[in-house]
Amino acid sequence: MNENPEPVVLDVWCDLQCPDCHRAESDLSALRERFGADLEIRRRHFPLKGHQHALAAAQAAEEAFAQGRGEEYWTALLARTAELDRRGPALLLEVAGQVGVDAEEVDTALIDGRHLLAVDADQAEGQAIGVTGTPTYVIDGQRLDGGRSQEGLRERVVEIAESLLAQRSGL
Image (tube, rainbow, N blue to C red; front, side, top):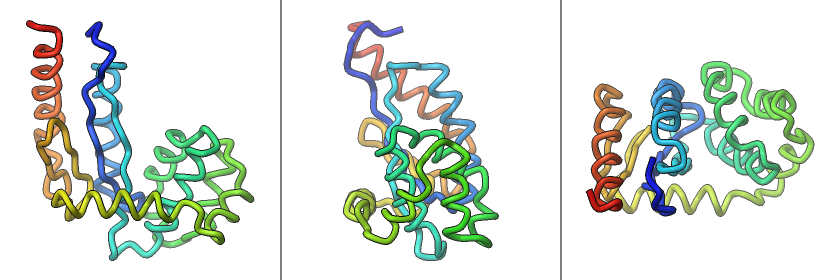
């Protein structure tokens, strides 16, 4: 598509226990397919207070990324948001094993809190720019709140991304 090595960046703030974030995965998949390397989707953590296992899930996901299987873990865990509510940390470890992540290392990471600063940094940045719910998208400085409604968000992201890519290629 675009020969410019600088992709458009889409930050997505997410709570891994959030059913709306699970529903947003199909939009993110469609965006990846449409734009390929021209759109960098960055997953950002925003565990909500009402979801008791969201903070642990975010830390577990960070460990999965450290082990090179973060995308798989993220997607698999979001597919089981209702089960996470019931099963908590046991599910975090089970999903790790299912996607090829060392579950014992995830358990250790949850105990020693090695990824807590990364999760806290994402959440603080989200709060600083006005994120209040999940999923929330930020592209070209524009915040799009998917927590209220997913309706039309993919189309809006496509519109902004295409405009930015056209500007970058001088069209």
